[in-house]
Image (cartoon, rainbow, N blue to C red):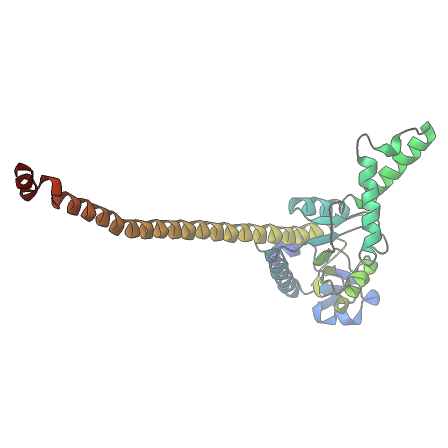
Length: 289
């Protein structure tokens, strides 16, 4: 994964915060200075936070974990969907449905309903009027838009990546209630303490969002490749050990079979050496008599 450099963040405008009157006091450790009524974010802390978040993501993926990307604001929708698809993870880019995490059982029922509606030749469409069919089609389109990024999510994610911590406050509160770690881009108007892994940066810049989310997606792909290599090495080592065991067992069987063959040969030789009593000279003399 190529590391995000200071110049890259500077070029995307990641250092621009909000106007000073909208700032959150808890954001003070990440502020470098104030200029023209706007807070300037310290990009060194941004790089450090991004590296910590990437390391955490790699740890989750190494344990076969799943991650949910959340970006429902207009600037982030296309970026989040593209990067989540690139690393084969789940995403939500439409309106966040209340209870997506805390009431996941109901969400699963809704997804099941969507799959039934999408199934060709479903019994739901039998013996229906034209109006009823249109209503079902509208329901299918609505559910497809709502659940398109989480249609195959069978369990709760192991972590959530959020683009704007202020905008996605409901998603963060649900994740915290279920003790799911949250990685989020936080701006100067946001409280970074409500997030487990805050990444201080300008959350309104499309290029900044693209850079940070792409870096996290690359970390996921890198961790997945590393895990695949480890599994391959383990399988290769297992095959080698099995082959060694098999050859060892074969050699032991050969060693055990050799004495038996020698014993058979000895008995055969002994039988050849012992004379037949019918052919002995004493027996021939008795016959002559």
